[in-house]
Length: 399
Image 1: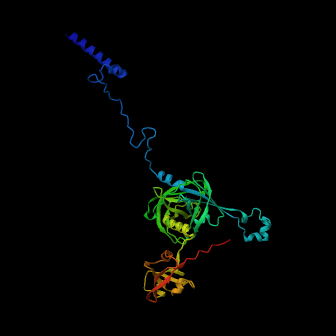
Image 2: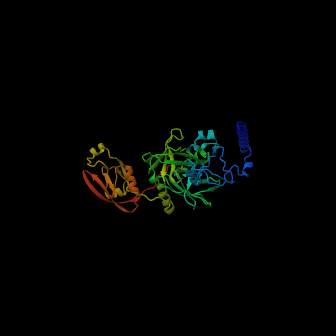
Image 3: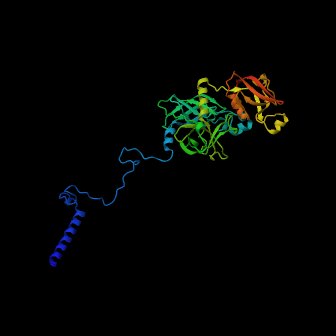
């Protein structure tokens, strides 16, 4: 009996070993006989290791949607096609030195190779804001140019015509005649906050279109001496020569500003750039397209900050206002009776405390309209009616 049990145990062991070997090396031999599954059904085998399934964001097959990206590639892809490179050529200028005998001795009677007759070429950027071909750029990019060439990011080129310019905001409007133009979406500069991410797109140093990123580092920058009317967006996105007139866009690729100037001691970016808010640029553009000029109010006064020393000297009781230091002859202020020493505190319903605020308040008025200004004179408050005139064009310096 014991011998039979040993034979049975050995036979069972051999059979199980054979089944293990077959199921491991040739499992298909057992599937047809129902040995690897239950009730003669298909085999319910377990995998030897777990295969990681593709995540929903990863493409499982060709043609699937691209994975989600971090960064601002989408914003750059939306805005970059509408940013162009501008080449502005100026006619050669002759200087007074060309008539000097020593100048003619060194450079020849016709000035061969002299700098006075070399053509001048300026490089900058611009932004297409209308399918009709209107572009925004800086006035200083195209000022005095006799020929303006625009190159799109797709390689197309066109000669641009100057619609109009406004040196006091450094905004210029160009127009090109091309079809299927990419157009940038205008954003809202008023909604920007310090710390918001922005991209600067342009053609710095003529190396080709470049995108840099940064944040809004300040808002409402003024009194920088760059323009007459200043309300700059300050950013630390790298802005270099050639970026002027290019786009400052938000994280969605919407235009929020026109890159204008940098603070630099070397000519390169030091992380302080300035852009004109798109709201200002749009107002100027609409006026230039509609009227050919920007109509601003003017009353003809020279102003200074009201300091405690001036307030004591002129016996002024108010603490906020703008000291009138001079009045232009025959200007609206002179005709209305304003005098040096008056402290202007209000224009219409708008209080003013600085010369910049007074300039903005008066410029916002339509020429040939009436308003009322409030002044302090010798301790008395006076309300004076005044008729606003058209602001004179700034004097352009000629060589």
